[in-house]
Image (tube, rainbow, N blue to C red):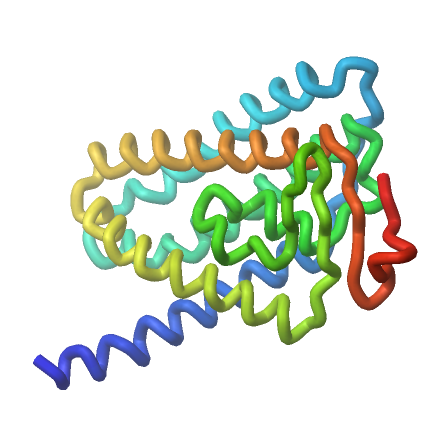
Length: 212
């Protein structure tokens, strides 16, 4: 039994690191957007969220369809496709509120993963009333957060992996879950960009915080 635990742990760590690398690839580059500041940003942002959630559900369902071992190979591509869509959605929502210029990787990480595990991202963005205080983290700090997220997701993926052996029902379940996941990302983004954002850290200390 101890041998199984020993062999499983390095495997999980490798998977976690691959997921963390993929996360950093997407949050490190804020995507361009064609959206612009809206007079009623919340309604427009929710419309963007619904469209993105539907697209994410279709993508997840199609990637879950291959049965057996082939289905396992789609796990990381599924996550990459999902994060590409979600980061674009967050950027579009930020633009609706006129806050795309200040959007950074810490805010992106917060939007993408706050609903997954609030404890992991709490050091990046703290909510104080309607104000969000963003800590500009160093690269090692960001890598550490990404690895923690990767470890959390790798454990969840192992649980979800059984759906790869049930082609049709697995696809339906994955689509529903990803729709929900994407909409939660949008809710976090809307809440973040609705309030005042104070940016603090290496480039903005507590006395000269950049607010927007």
